[in-house]
Length: 287
Ligand code: AMP
Image (tube, rainbow, N blue to C red):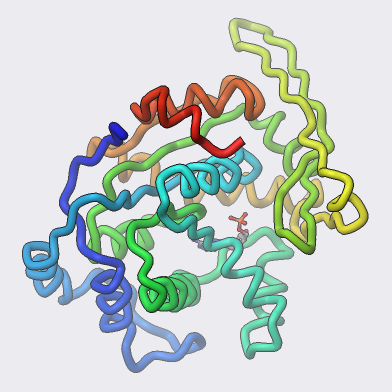
């Protein structure tokens, strides 16, 4: 499989332990200094000592509703690495009876970002759990979402590739409003049929709905933050806080821009092609 792998990596073990070290002695609610830190030099050492080949360490960027989860989860099956979506980690925590649940619910339902401190703690816990199960490599989805998060990530490991998925704003809103999730299997579907005509030199786009199979239909729910008002706020916050992250990776030569040409049937093979994954692999990709 020809995957674009450019940089040496450190293991998830180093990643999570490095993050934990940086945040050690803090609780999720405490105020901490997120300046990138003295551990950078220590970390450079880790990089030299624990270089490991063969596991992708990719990041998926893109506005809410663009399809990061869909394509990142397909690629994770395809490449045999975990798909780690920080939005899922946040939703798990807010649906739990943990001390953060109500605080997180309020933030998420307003379309705001959770603090860097909380998100890094959740990610760190997830990586440690994965490490215990023998996971290696990852596709991160929804992280980093601020420059601060990108700097911390850069401080602890080398990201090979950052895929920036792009779709016009009008389609993003329709996709979020049409999103449905099966509460049992967790899969995402979409009831929206998007048909935006091209005008003023801008291309149009057509995306079929993604219907749920009969067994999921009675169990479909909408995310509480997929209302028009909240999606507009999430898109505004993306522009303000997360778009600079694109530039962060562009300036490091790691950003692969990918304009989605349509729904999954058109976009998936083109994405594989852009990622330099060969045809033989495409045939065995998830349906
Ligand atoms: P998502 O499923 O990626 O749309 O994320 C849902 C919500 O979780 C976001 O609107 C944020 O409130 C929160 N969230 C997820 N990832 C992050 C992150 N990296 N930084 C801050 N907040 C996040």
